[in-house]
Structure formats: structure tokens, C-alpha cells
Image (cartoon, rainbow, N blue to C red):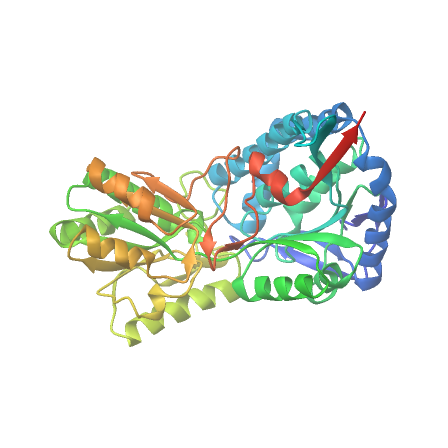
Length: 479
């Protein structure tokens, strides 16, 4: 059994969870300890005790540890990628790519530990100097989702440690394997006892303690909108710092002048790869009249070539949905869309077994056409390989439709018009904008985050991560 890591020791939990392979539900990936409230408080105590020394550790010490973690992750990318694909269901190439991203994130923040920055300014008063520096917050609670089980933990844990914070990490209950593997690497990295703690368990127990314990200085959360709102309310009540990354209903505009091949690639990659289980997925395709019919036909032809199969099998394009609950949600939204008058143009059927007879949570990617803006399929996040199409008269209407959403994470446009691309970059109400590129594909060294209901608080990743993981101090000195 894989145990929790608290105060430098591997500890049994109050219960045990079973990690099941969604490509073959007969395959048990492993059994993982489940922490309870008491163990979570123990982890917080360990982090609190470790913070004074770790916050004053040298940049070289933090660099060495984070760089070593990144090096090991990259060296083991094939092994860790196989584990990730097995437990989460994204294809093996995607999983290996995610692991590589996690390794590069640790290496990036190793460098950031050596570049803390700061300012030295003269005061408006003679003989007085002013220094502006950043300091660690304290103990950071980290709560991560199941769809990127190593990359998202990496982009939260690495900056937290780089800037001198201590960590209590709660991964998604559904996919603990990759998180545990990352914790095992961190346990051997040279981190002092208590600086990093892993508490696997239910949100109702572990997560609740992280939100309510006054020793947690900040909480960073990625997950659903409903849970994010609970995180916000709990943190505001005790004036703790919080950072939220939540949902998306991301648009991809396709204009009449678009290169058809580029547009189809952007739509299919964004909407269906990683089984559509990405908050940056383009789940709304907004297509102008002149290209609409040709584009829809071309997307369907491409969808016909996509192989839905075991995530670890060579040649698989689309792996399984993560579990039965998510599969049911995807199918429910397909039914709602058709009830509201939309047309299921392709796909959408559940596949109970693959060619080898493996039982899994397979769903053929679905394209829904003849939709209108008010339909639920265009308002709510499905989080699966389900994409809707909206027809627009022209660019101006397409832009209005793209921004007509309570979310604002990512947005894309396929066009050969510099005029329209330039206008869209400025007027899109999204935190990340892609021109002739899939929306689901971002770099690790630049800011990640959205607007409106998608995000709250400072950006993640890149140098902008310092805004959340540090607090500014201003010092005045008269010689």
C-alpha cells in the first residue's frame, strides 16, 4: 500500500482507496492510504514547525533540491508517463508529455529560487533608503484535480517551495498514483523534515481541514466552480490568501478566410484530445456562414479517423473517460442538447469494451451542431470529448458569441486576416488567447489563468507565480 508522507515519515491512513485503470476496469493500479482530519492536522503542524528554517534557507539550497527533482522526473518520464496513462486515461504520448512538463516546471522554479528580485529605491526624504522584497507566506495548502495528476501538482508545489513556503498537498482522490510518485521523489530530494507533506484523502475530511485551519496561510485550488466557491468562502472568512483555477467553456472562432486544415486541427486537438478533459479545451466552435458546412464536414471526416482505445496502446488517439461518473455526465449532456433541439452530428456512443475485450469507460467523441447560445451545452462545462458548433454571420457576431459565457479561461481564432486576429487578441475576454493554434496547449514558463468565472487571484506558472506565493515587504533605513 502507498502511504501518506507526513513530517518526513510514510504513514498508514485511516482507510484505503483503490485506484482503477479506466482503460481496463479489471486492472488495479494500486491501493493508497486515505488520511483523516487528525493526520491532516499533524501534517500542518509539521509544516508549521519546518517553516522558520526553510523560509530562511539559501537560494542555492532550494535550487539544488528543485533542480534534482526536475532531473529525476525527466529521467523517468517514460515510467511515470505509463503510470499516468494507466490511472487517468490520457494517451501515452500525452502522459509522457505531461510528465516532461512537470520536470521542466521544477527546473524553471529552481532557477527562480536564485532570482528572487527586489528593488532598492531612494526615499523622498533625504538620507533614507527603501528596500522592497518578497518573503514566503508560511504553510500553503495545495488541492489539485484529477485531469493533470502530475503537471498541476508540479506547478503549485515547485513555486511554493522555491519561494520558501512549506506545503501540505492533497491530490485528487480519483488519481493518487502520479501524485504519490511525485511525493516519493520529493521525499528523497533533501527537503528538511516537514517542508513537504502528502495527505491523500477525501475533500470532505482533508480538504475541509486545509480550508479551516488558521495555520494554513494560503490555499491554491484547481477544480470545479462549485468547490472553488467553497474554498473562497472559507478563506475569506479567516482572511487567508487563496488562488482558484476553475472551469472553462472555451470558444474557437473559425472565420471564412481560415485555412481549413489549420482550423480542423485546432478544433480536433483542442476539443477531443486528452478525452476533452482539459479546462482549456475548445468545447464551443463558432463558425461563420461561408465556411460552416465545409468545416463541419471536414471535422467529422477527421473524427472518423480517431481511434478510441486503451490509453497505453500504440496508435490510440483518444483514451477513456476517467470514470463512470464522468462518462454518465458526458452522456447526460448529449441527451440534454438533443432535447433542446441540437443535432448529434457524429459520435457520442459509449463503447463498453475495446477490441481486446477490456471493459472501460470509452466514449466516441461527439460533435453537436445546430446549437444556439442559450442551450446548456453552450453554457455549462461538460468536461469530456463533447464539442458543440455555433453558426455566426460574420466576425463581429462570432466575437459576441465567444465572449457570451460566464467563463474566460482560453479562446482561439482560426483566420488568415491580420486585422481580425489583432482585434480578437485585444477584445477576447479570456486570460489566454491563441491564434491559429489549439487552445489546449500552453507553455510552462509563462502565466496561466483566466477571467470571469474561470479564475480568481494571481496567475499560476512563470514569474507571475511569485504574486501568490510571496508577500511584499517594504523596509526603510536611515543610516
